[in-house]
Every structure is written in structure tokens, then in C-alpha cells.
Image 1 (cartoon, rainbow, N blue to C red):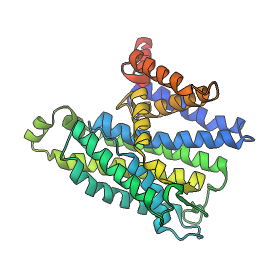
Image 2: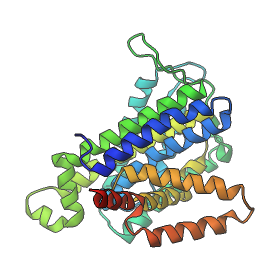
Image 3: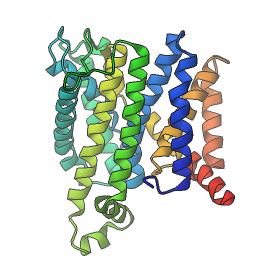
Length: 320
């Protein structure tokens, strides 16, 4: 079985069927369909950060830079009023984001711990202020996407990205593919070496592995998928602005990863869903929702030491 942990299997067989059915009851309410789509897209971004932090031990507060770049790169390279092929431009965006991550990674991966947090934050903020102050890229207002790409492949088209329901199911499929991708990576020889790098880089180096190279490849992969998530978010709302690159976006994603269970991957989805659910609930209860939100997050982190995924793992183990 692909998902080796029983808890992972339970999650996949419960979450994804529910996610498939839920929009059918909300079809008449486009707001909730769009909200669910945003949660699914952000879960992909959180998963890429969760891999870096939980599986590779690389704590970064600049991951949102690539999330924002996904949308900006599409606007930069795509014709303004032409429906381009989604798959071709997805390839372009992911490759360009990976190349940018290669350059950034050569700089930031020479540090670790608090120094890596600070230098990734500094680079992301420089990028944020560049786009904020740039008239060419719309400044703080950002830029609009007037025509969404065409998803046809070999003459066949199954998704119309202008339809909110189609877009939701397309993003859900992307989320599942991302989960499978990260499971393949972590279960491979490369993934096992990265675990060794995280646990004991000195011993891994002594065994003959180039620790810097492995960390750099992981950084590029995670950055490319973060850009893909940002690309989808920009397509959903038809615009991109510098707020996507802010350190608050990275900080929120990090909180979601911790809440879900750092390093569990599927916990990234859990953390995103629970965080966004609490956010929506408290926001509509009181104008002081930030106080309730903060208190609840602190309580959950203190109660669930291994995150929500750890709670599910323990429940499954007891049942076994």
C-alpha cells in the first residue's frame, strides 16, 4: 500500500471523498466554493514548507517569496489577453522558480538555525518591497489576470478554470498529486538521506554524501511547488499582489504546519483546514477574533505536542 501508515490511509480515504462531495451541497453558494478552493491551494503551499521544515530541518520565513512569484511569473511571461496552455506555463513557472531557488539556496543554505531564518526573511522582504514599490508591477495594488489558461491536453479538456466548481476540483486533484509526490520523495533513497541530513549532517557527510547538494535540491523542489500553489491562487482570484510575499504569509503557513504535525505532510492539510475553519468561525463571532484565535492556537499546540496528525496516529495505534 502506498501510504504505509494506517493513519495516512484513513486520512486519504476520509478527507478526499469528503472534499469531493462537499462542494455539491454548496454549488449554489459560490463564496463557500471559492473559500474551499483557497484552503486547498494554501494546503499545497503549507505542504511544501512542511517538507522543508519537518523533513529537512530547514526553517525559513521567506518561503512566501516563491508563493508570490508563482503569480508574478505567469503575468510576466504570458500574453495578456491570450488563453495560453496551462501545462506549458506550469512547467515554465516551476522551472524558473526552481532556478531562482537555486541562486537563493546557494546563499541561504550556507547558514542554519536562526541565521537561516533571518537571511530568508531578509531576501523575501527585499522581494516584497521591490514589487510593492514597482510601478511596472502595479505596486501594492498588484496586477490582474484577464484570461485564464486552457487546460486541454492532446485535444481533450476536462476542466474549465473559469468555472468555480471545475477550478475547485482541479485544485483538489493538484493537492492529491502533491501529497503523492512528497510521499514518493520521502519514501525514496533521496528522502532517507535527507532524514539523515536533518538528524545528523556531520555523520551523513562522513558517509560520503554531499549534504549541501541534497539540501539545495530539496529547497528547489519545495520552492517550485510553492510557486505552483501561488500560480493557482493568482488564477483563482485573477490578480496577484505583494501581500502574497509578506513574512506574515510564511508565518501563517508555519503555524499551520506546526498545528497539523510538522513533517507528517498530510498534517499540513489538517493544519490548514483547522486553522482556516477557526479563522472563519471566530472572525464571524466577534471583532476581537484575533484574541480567541491566538488563545486557541496556543492551547492546541500545548495539548497536542505532535500536532493533529500525532493525535490521529495515537488513536489509530490504540485501536490497533
